[in-house]
Image (cartoon, rainbow, N blue to C red):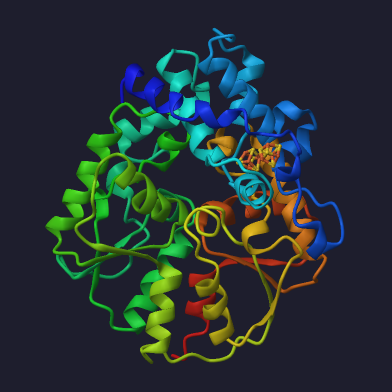
Length: 396
Ligand code: SF4
Ligand code: SF4
């Protein structure tokens, strides 16, 4: 997208921006339910100043649109790029105010505007964008190693394509392996793209780096079509959101159905394709922002867990009021200490329930939790993706 196109997109938000009342209700979870003032906006909780609230970023957006701000200082970029895009503020705000914009859409458009003006992104974001161009993944890993985790053959074409995603391919390969184990147990007719799978584009979309996004989307859609896919399944919540929400936004319609693996797995269980044994352990579930608030999938992961007969316990901040793990929006790359702080905050909330397992349904969440948990000495907690729990629950 060029600068003119992005400025026009940004201008569309302008008439609504005056409607923010600075009430700050976007900062906290529903106090009627929790009976306490518990933050849901990670940056407001961490940095305190209103600039780091949703309302502060709305004011910055207005100043940029009205050109009362004509350049971006390092502090302004910090305010913009610490936002994880978790959408907790949107969920809270829309319950209480008349504001009709999606703040995450606004903040992502502001980031794209800053990039188009040459003010952004941050150096770490540029690094992963360059790796996506060169290696088709943000991790600077060789594209030919994308399926190094796969230990068995898959067919060259199939009606179901498992889109593995960069994080499960290179950083949390146990999730890809567990997913394949479940698919094979169900005798699902699936294949994968291998090195023909390119990054879904989420890291560059979230950080406003939209040059080349349409080429990347075209490639992925054509590569999937070439495998004869009728359905694509995703274990990464971020990839799923990109295909579901962003690809259409950039003008692409999908010639196949898409599902997150938790949806697909639940269907497999209901159709008696999986023979499961009870896991009988205490589990709490962390809703990934991309899967919950962004694509409204709350029930299916919990239903899969219930089919495994776990003792499911909910954290106070749950479902649409889930607290972000802190990794999204390019935050983990640019602000690792803040990402770790958010994950630690969430881990402490989980540990209050004394569970055996903290489950999630996104490799990026798991990755951030696993890294943060390294500082919890002498504490026992399994951090697992639902695909891993399901693989563990297979009666073999
Ligand atoms: S809840 Fe909505 S209206 Fe109130 S401060 Fe937050 S963004 Fe503004
Ligand atoms: S998207 Fe998340 S981090 Fe960003 S302002 Fe809203 S609640 Fe805060």
